[in-house]
Length: 205
Image (cartoon, rainbow, N blue to C red; front, side, top):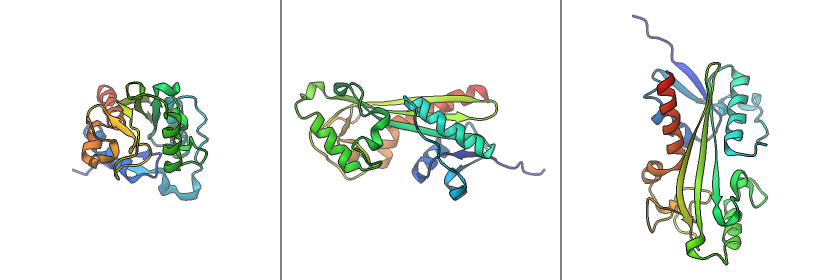
């Protein structure tokens, strides 16, 4: 019997790690599926402006743009840090909070300065991830959280972004940047969001 051609799902990211994580979690509910980075399209694809007010809105903006451009099912995530003492900042501006997109060092310095006078008991925070899936038939966003708090100094060399300052509740005494990739993936907000998406797709498919 002839093998069925795999379904292609576009992933609106250039982050190879995200694609691996998506493939690992969703392959059980989407067998015979090939997850491809939108970056494979090169300059032909123009990334949309992420002007949503929430992580969910931005995830859908990216997923819907990839779906519209390719005609294929698409996945995109938007994530960031929410700090209670800062009224939810940096939120959807997490990657560019200090002014330059992706300047982790500047973002972390700003976070330390903003929380300089905040006591240990009032430094609660969480990472939030929304992973959107868009096709002709499905429009759904899985949402995941990683609860924790903000430390007083950066520790650890793993991860990226705010990981050196974020202390997950699930790993007392360790920042996210002090965890192995396997430890981080087991508790991460993106993992929880993908699990929620997988559960929904399992119901639908």
